[in-house]
Length: 258
Image 1: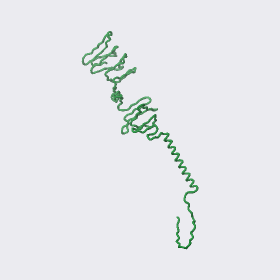
Image 2: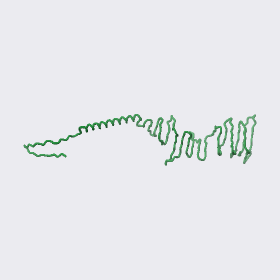
Image 3: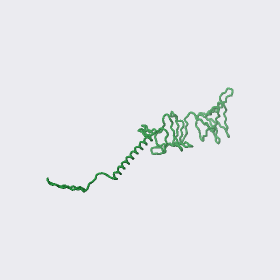
Image 4: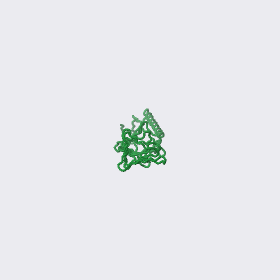
C-alpha cells in the first residue's frame, strides 16, 4: 500500500522533496510477455485451422440451405437421391420413389417391414428372406390398380377375386378339403381329371352338376361303385354322333358322385 504525504508551506519557504525510493512499472515484461504473445499466436493458428476444417467439411459433405449431399429437406419431408445404406432401423410414415424410377430395397440378409400401433406392438410384418417371403398379419390382400380385390387370405378362407384361376403345374392342384367354384375347366385340347386317390370324390350343386366334353369322352372310374343320385327330377345322358360333330353332353340335376 502506498501512502501519500502532503506538506504545507508558505511563500518564500523552500522545501526539498524527498527522492522516490520505489518505482513501479505497469505492464508485462520479459519472458511473461513472450509467453503471452506465443499463446495468442497459438490461439490464432488453432482458429484458422478450425475455420479451414469447417469449410472443408461443408464442401465435402455438400451442405446447403436445403439439405446435405443427396439429402434434401422439402415441405413434404426428406428427399434422398441415389443409393443409401442404413445401418440401423429406418422409421418413416411413407417411403416412395420418384415418378420416373423404381424403389429398390436390398439387404444381404433379409428385408423386414413392420407396422406398429400406438403402443409399439407389431401389427403387421413383411419379411423377404433368401429362401422365403413371410407375411404376418390378420389379413393378406392383393388388389388391382382399380382397387378390386384379386387375392385375399385370412384365418378362415382364401378368396380369389379374378375371373379365372389357372393351375399350370403337371401335378395339378391338391386340396385337402372342399373346393367351392362354379366352373372347373381344362385348357383346350387338354384332359380334365378329378380324382381322389384314397377317399371318395363327391360333387354337389343346388341347381345341378353338368359334365361337358366338346372333343373327347367322359370316363368315370372307381374302385367300388359309381353312384348318380338326384333328389328331384331325373338323370339324363345325351350322346351325339361323330358325323354331325355335335357335343357330347352329360347333364344331371343335383347329384352326388362317389
